[in-house]
Amino acid sequence: MQVVSIVNLKGGVGKTTTAVNLAYELAVRHGRRVLLIDADHQGNASKFYGADAAKGSLADLMEGQDYTALVQPTSYRNLDILPSDMGLLSADLSLVAAGASCRNCLPDLRVAVQADNRYDCMVIDCPPAFTAASVSAIAASSAVIIPIKLDFYAIDGMRELVSQLRQIQTITAVHIAGALITQWHNSDVVRQGEAWLRTHEPCPVFDTHIRRTDVVDKSTYWRRPLAECSPRSAATADYAAFAREFLQKEAAGDGTQI
Image (cartoon, rainbow, N blue to C red):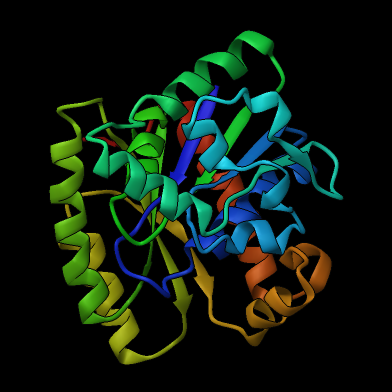
């Protein structure tokens, strides 16, 4: 079973946009049974799909509850969600204060889901920090996708992220499927940044990039995936192409074991 974590330590690079649209593409266009997990206490993926974390959340899973009582359906076929809200931050802090860890909660969830044969894929939206939930997400993952906006700070932060992932390798093997360029537009600085990223950074870069468009912001207000919100937009086409590329690379075993 594929478990995909969307990870970057920098905010504003399109992690949640990538998570919610990749989950939609895999579920609706490719017929995969997808569980989207919101591992960010801001709960933006949960809000996007209208999930109510008060009815059950990732924080409850961390405290030992069975996942089957916490998962909620979305309005899209093949796509369910395990939501989060600020209670996840409280649970994380409580674990730290108690000297405990939920490192195994998402790897254990992966095992349970595989045993139940309920889903083909889990997509995990991680926060811009290494929390107990995000480390657990990476430990459970068969692939890590790194969305990146092409500016100096983001490219510089990529090196730190890869360094941190190397440390997590002491817990589990970390497979980077690739960096996904987001908010791409045709300018000298973006083209130069892309050339640098593809030449110098220590992980693969997807061929597909996600073009910058106001439709992405509109989709967050409407709380609808790009394919539903604006079927003909550039970003819609890009996320569809990205999902195809990701599936092809995973089937071929491409990526970096760091």
